[in-house]
Length: 605
Image (cartoon, rainbow, N blue to C red; front, side, top):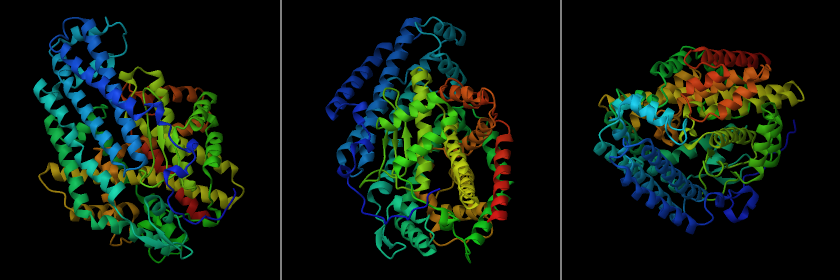
């Protein structure tokens, strides 16, 4: 393992200072903004065509099939329009042109949904047997069969044509809380400057904040934490109102769809039994000894009188910490994922060479990282790469998503191409696991291996335990509103503090800014999203065990899983690889492995 000196933070570059090979090639979606406008006209024509099918769906299989195909074509083009506009906006959130185009595309998508809102109510007037018989007479069978079975299962939650139209039209308004949060978080928040390890004054950004939390200098970590969250504290009433509005939105749709509560409504689409969610939280919270001990071990190794949340990300063994360039990170990832086979590696190599990734932080660019699949082009991966080991793992993570999307979209018809969020983090976290094992194998000595063991533990801490804690927070705030309460900043601060101490353990010291962390987490605007990181992580670790053990046929089964899209329920798809998430076994195994790794770290460190 090569250790190099961390470079000083420099001014955030402008977009024109980045080599094109490290930028998205958005012409793969539309050649120009003018062609995007042509796409809008195409969508408008398809929206107008919707009325031709009203009242006629039961007339013949051919008419029903044509309606489905027209709606699919419309959904594909509206998704493409929104993706192009939003990806351009992400490159510089200060540019009002793409903000406006994004809003236009979102409005168009809402109108598209409203135009075809008659479909489900009209289909449910047809006898179930007749409906399935009609599918067997489609020009292409096996495309809409799962959709129709799901429609029948969902029948009691589908409202009248008039109500469905109103619900579809409300989608644009419902985006308000998330849009407000995004604009505040990515465009309007101003972070202060702090002094780095060498005494140089550096203006905080999200990426620099993350990097400073990895500093070996406790003063830098504290200053970055206080400075960063002071910006959120100044706007906590706005942030509390936006999150409260998002939860109120969830409650509204839950009642409109006649579900018992928001959790049940969010799980229904993937047919996830409610006990799976509660079992994840309860099983984990009954086995917090490992994560509590990890906080104590960190405090000891770092030689701290008090340990705070901002002390949980810095390397325990900074003498083995190192920088890695983007090109070298790509090389390591390609080597690490060799066990997944030549076909997987060929696609991954093409992705890196074909501008699927927008690599570096630039002024106004969206923060963090994500992967966004496309049915008509290829996935697009946003990074803000800053030469850290953590960013290398983030890149491996997002490319897992990208390959999952690519394989599903290139294998399944559009109606079955979108995989569930429940399995969405399997490919990403499996990639991280393989990268860790690859680096462990290359480690030169015990000190290097200890550093990587710490990284493995931190991976589980971040991807599993944190997400379970977030899942409990999300459940509590939904229940508060469902029971007639209101979400004030004080309520959410107190809840966050309570859960932090419970999960991290009695050694954790809470400062005045740590309770504000809820205010900057975008996933809370996505209605019970975060728990699926934890379930996916547990599933990926089970698959990783099979891969590393050389289980016969597991690579083929795994690629089959990645190519399955949404052709079945996610719990059933995971069974392809021999993983049953309806049992506590994968979670128990993850908890046990983590506790053993913490014990080893405590012994060796």
